[in-house]
Length: 292
Image (cartoon, rainbow, N blue to C red):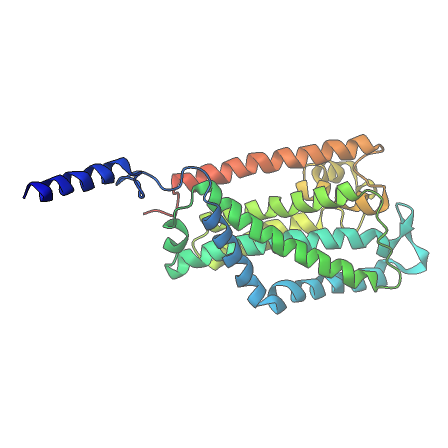
């Protein structure tokens, strides 16, 4: 019996001396960023839109190309030049980034809203992801779709005989392309939190996103507008994204007469995205329209 008691004490002391393999009850397992969960949600969203790529990537690209064909035939005849290039070359960059932004909005606004309507929103809210990680994964997936649409559009427009996509400032293409996609992805995510049915989301697309896109200087330079409409255009964030993206290809834009004006616009759209990201984060954290 003494030997058994001694062996029990020895096992007990050995167990106490070994480090605890699992944390105590209530102690968090994830102390910083949940990279595994973040990557999993991101891949889930990418695979979702990639499974229907005909609808999410190729169809928007073809629709945008139709804009190029129609407006080039209607307005680009007679050797018309804008900012020193033919009309097709002028309008192509704006159509590329417009397609990117619209698809970033569509991607970010769909999954969350469909989860709310179908009652599967718990699949987004229950996993061990913070509000910032959830927002980051959704926005990153939307930006991925936007970049893919932009690449497809660029490749197709290179085949258009009168389009020249020579690059003048690569940084502007990358910066304004990404900032525009992030801006619309954040707006789409915020819209999906607010909306209660697909009609609400469609209203934002038809009455906010589409008008701001088409009236942002995609097909014209704002110098041709009356002073009042020029002032309205200059408070439209889409104008700075499209003109800045076009500056990356043409080396000229209607933002201002100097490159410094474009740089200021780049910093402004970046700051706007930071503010919008904070708004989305705090709305998401509050549980508004998500937690009953």
